[in-house]
Image 1 (cartoon, rainbow, N blue to C red):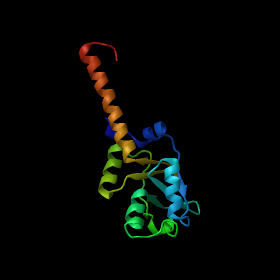
Image 2: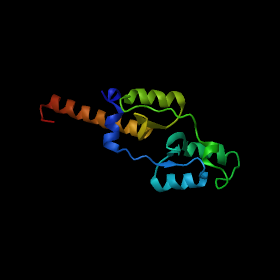
Image 3: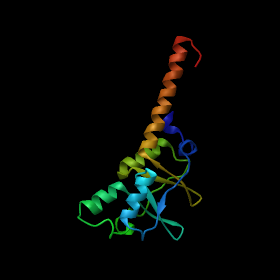
Image 4: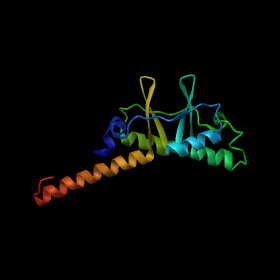
Length: 148
């Protein structure tokens, strides 16, 4: 069951790279880093702790739509805080529920107060689709009598 699988499985496949930025950096620097790293959000770290998360959506809603300057606005002014996070033991289904209820697309994963990764809604959907494809392949092999 793909929804019962733990986030740890996704992180093993995806890797635990976490891109972060300081709250004092500009939004322009954050957007440039997101573009360079090809990610939609950055974890905001202050003095070794998670202070928030900043996403492309924050930029669009809190800078562009309000006529602010990305080169003059700091990350701390638009980041989402406090941050909701999960542990590697949370299931795919639990994470999807959290993301849906809170209407965000990126979820940091913490283990023993240390950030070990960030999962996106895309990661969860891709995981579910690949697991369903594998299940279908096994069922087709079973029905036809061919080895999977």
